[in-house]
Image (cartoon, rainbow, N blue to C red; front, side, top):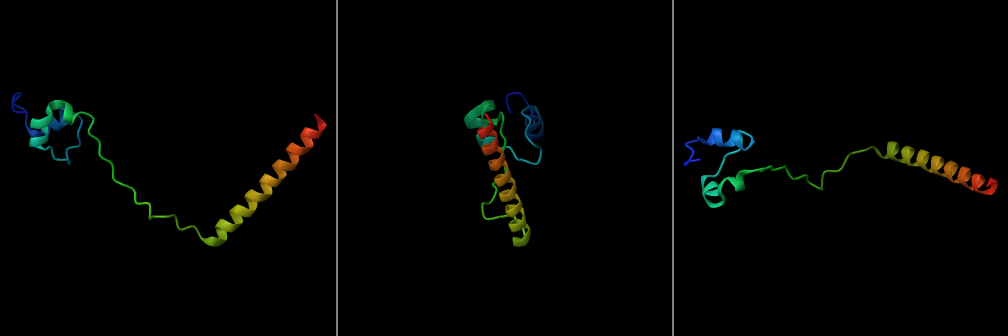
Length: 83
C-alpha cells in the first residue's frame, strides 16, 4: 500500500476485497500482500434457526414418502423374482 502509493480503496480493488470491508494496515504490514489475497468472510449460520414447517404438512409428506418407498420395495422384490 505505502510502497506502491495506493490508497485503501485502491488496494481493496486490486485484491478483490469488498469495498465495505475495511483493510487493516497492521494486517498488511505483518503479512504483506499475501495476507490480503482471497480474503472472503462469510456470515456464520446459526444452527438454532430451524425451518418452521407445519407439523401437519410434515406428517403428510412423510406418509407419502413411506407409500412411495413401499411401492418401490414391492416393485424391486417382484423384479427380483422374475429374474
